[in-house]
Length: 175
Image 1 (cartoon, helix red, strand yellow):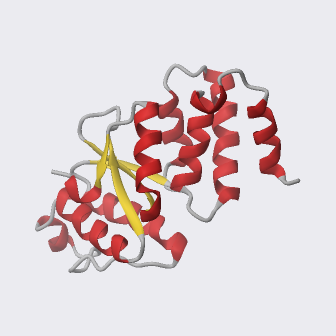
Image 2: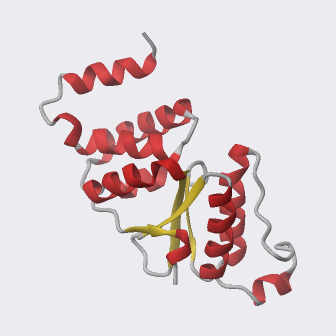
């Protein structure tokens, strides 16, 4: 028995079963933390603690809070430097690097590029390594937000997102 079995045992006693928000959040965290169940569990524990403190009126706000810069990101749409930094931070978990087709430390690079172009570059390169970059709708209008999953988990990610009411699209569909 491991620490994940405790959550599975609790879920077995839950009348809502696999369709509960909490269960779907757990599945989401597993998907956006590929190969890192410990990270998913840590974020899930933080999620549960915040739900207990604040209520669960907006579970996605809480998920965004507990995953920010660990397995997810939210950056201002005009902050291309922040977007590059966030994606670089997430892909470093798998010892990957994105070739941004320029020097992201150079101010001129950011003058000539926008968020959709960066999403496309990262999506294509991650996809070649078996990962999918997702864009999700955020609370604020002028924000880019997203996650990365294994490409083999694209369909489960769509199902979980639909169940949780998350507007989600592939990173190469950002416009």
